[in-house]
Image (cartoon, rainbow, N blue to C red; front, side, top):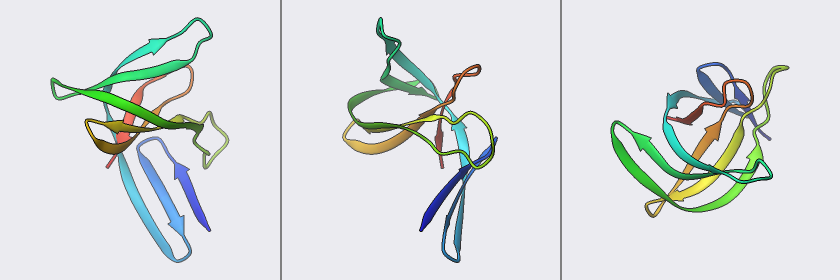
Length: 99
């Protein structure tokens, strides 16, 4: 069984005896917010470079490890490559990726 835990700076993945730790990376995102409040990322900005989001394959709430608000997970195709980006919940609403 695979479990994902998201802490302030690290994402911890546990599957049986294996544990993988990933670091959060802050990114800028150009987003569209419609009249219903649905947020759609249009482009990712990192180190002054702009990467267009070609397609969003899925959007889901990411399960938290502790009692806190959980970020939204966006599975995307960005310039032909599958990528996962996250958006923190209210109040920070910051975008990030993991490495």
